[in-house]
Length: 304
Length: 127
Image (cartoon, rainbow over all chains, first blue to last red; front, side, top):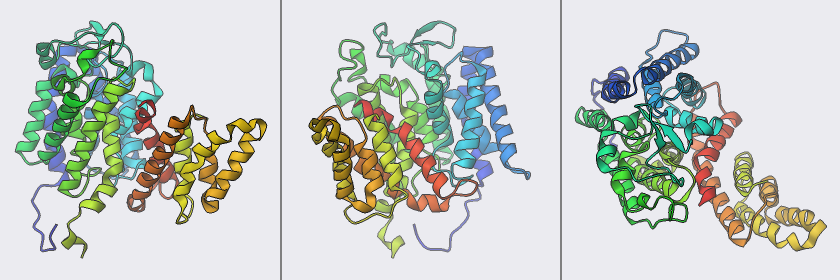
């Protein structure tokens, strides 16, 4: 951080939000293609609920792109073939509670989509923690991250192509990757953040020993970096949640430290707790650490 | 009260108290509560008195911490460490609390953050 004069990049919040929405188009399209009407209803209802919630809080004519981004990301974390009202409820909670009550636009303490996802995990755990998830193609099966007795190792090809039970975003990991790389290419996000997050997930997955919860139940969850990267909310969290400029750290080193902590927390929860996935919770933890990380990583010359 | 609930409630209460220099001594409350258990009917009053003595100006937090049910010494020590970590985390968020916009400001936004952290850190309770 250097003192002024500062030059405006020319990119407004509206442009940045439009780029994020554009980056979400491939995974949304893939999810609808795979999931059909239920997936389209989940996405559509989430976008509508986010828009309505935003309009309820912002009386004057204001850009609603950020609410749409929140609604879309939230919908993509919901179970494929899940009820449309679950996505709508989540999106409304995200905008109302996460964005407006939780600090206000531009000052939110926590990532809105991650917060809503965590709230839904508490409110309707049966719908988000079901041992057997409905897949995008309607087949009910155990999630690749499931630790239950009837869980099974998902082949790598199925993981890559999204041929397994999980969230809407998990139906097309390559589309999430394409959207994320687009954001990096147009410099909408700091590419080091997802890189550090994915690196931390991979390293933790490779080197952490198998815990009691997976030993004998789902041993393939240990030492399997690709499984942890391609399933659950890891890709979405790395590209679309941890890179949130409002709730993320101000300094680059702070952002990367938060990403590393979030990556480790994601895998710790998957290996040693009953949670099948906790990427959203890891994002919230990283958000909470933001002020402390900023305070420790701000350059000395900026303080003096 | 579950150990994790006691830890989060105590940390949340600590946000509204003026911190004495030795506030961190309150973290010993779970260990004292466990040590007092053999006293039977006197266990809870004894644990409460001991918690009060740890840091009188931080007593509400210490009392909440002492009210938790701890499975054993390891659980109590883990809860003490979690209390210190969560308290420090919430304290580090103070600058952010001052920046937020209405309608939630002051005490409500602090309680909101504590509630979010309760869920975000819940997996820690299973480690």
